[in-house]
Length: 269
Image 1 (tube, rainbow, N blue to C red):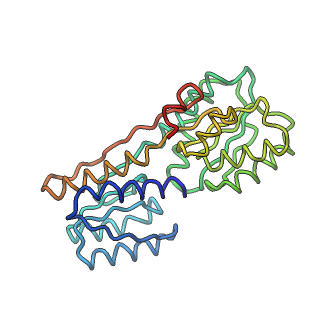
Image 2: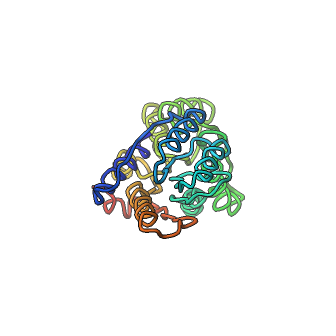
C-alpha cells in the first residue's frame, strides 16, 4: 500500500532525530494471527513501546491487552482498535468521506447518477468513509442516485475491473467516488480506455502522487489528503513523550484536507 509505505518511511526519518530510539520493524501482510504473533514477540523482547497499524479492528484486541498486561504502551497508527488501552494517532476516516460528500453535494448536477468504490469489507475505515460521504452528500441531495456501490478492496486493478463492468452496465454516470486513490486511479484508467472520462468527476482519498498528477492534468476532480508524514511525526512525538515520562494521550488527530484543481499546486512536491 502506497500510503502505508510513505508513512513508514516518514517515521524512519523522524526517528533519526533521537539516536537513543531503536526501531524493529515487522510486517503482518494483512494477517491478524501473524500480527498477534509479532506483538507476542515484542512483549517477550520487553520493548519500551509498540507502534502498530492494526490489521483487524476486533482481532487486534488480544495483542493490545497482552502489551497492556506487560506494561508496554501501545500506539495504534491510522486505524483504531475495538478495545485495550492504546493511543490512537491518525485521521478520522468519517471526515474523509464527509469532505468527498461536501464536494460532490456542491458540484454534482441535478438528478446526478454516481457509483461508489468501497474499501475492503469489514475494515472500519471502509465503513466510516462511506458513512461520511452518505451523510454529507446523499442525505443532503435526495436527487442524487447511487447506481452501484461495490468493494474493490483498496486495489487499483480491482478498481479498474469494477469500473469496466459499470461502463458496460450504465450508459451514463456523473461521478465515481472511491474510498482511496488507488481505486480512483483504476477507475480513471478504465474510463480513459473506454473513452468515457468526459463529464465524469472522480474523487479519491490519500493524496498520493499519482492522484495529485491526475488532478493537475484535469483527469481527477478531488483527493482527500491523508498526511502520512504528519501521522508519522506525531507518532514519534508520542514515543518521545513516553520516553520523557509523560502520560500517554488517548488520541492525536491529524486532519484530512481536500485537494482540488484550486489548491493542488500546494501539495505537488
